[in-house]
Image (cartoon, rainbow, N blue to C red):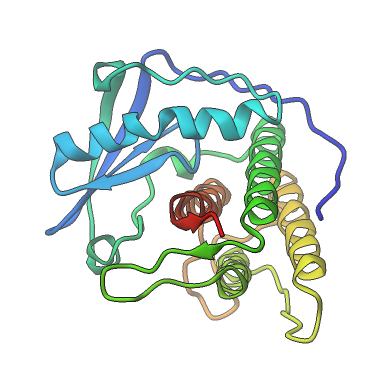
Length: 240
């Protein structure tokens, strides 16, 4: 599927890992500030931090495949909570929706390189999981719910198009196009939007005055959503 030249990652992560909490009425998300996409939920703060820690090795595998160095902590004591945010209905629905304040800082050339390297790693991992799951049945939930691979890919494409709209970046889905072609086209649009953000070409407000996402928030949401479904496919795939 997607083939693109690599950007050399230049991450300078905090040690210990800085974490923010998004606190809803029903659930809490714990997210790693420096590592977009590494964000998990729990019923309380302790459970959220533990879930984040438990998924650290899976996040590391995604990045190591793209030669991005990352070492998760062995236990939640490796996290330092630096910000607590009040969540909303979307939080309780099961999706992170309140960005950390750090996302508002200027989006630099280094940030563009980091974001592109990280997203390429996520895309490569997603493609590999799709290939591995081809021909397998995805186990249904306890009530018989759950998307199949085809609808999962469509859902990711629809979400990415919506996320690009939050940067006021115009893109249009083609329902008739091959899914692989659409993934490539959408990913190139994401890279182009990030490059424009690095040049200061992304506005803070839409044409009608509505607030747009900061580029860092966009990267955080795209990576989280893709990885959440990547891990879902891994967990639900059954050997035929």
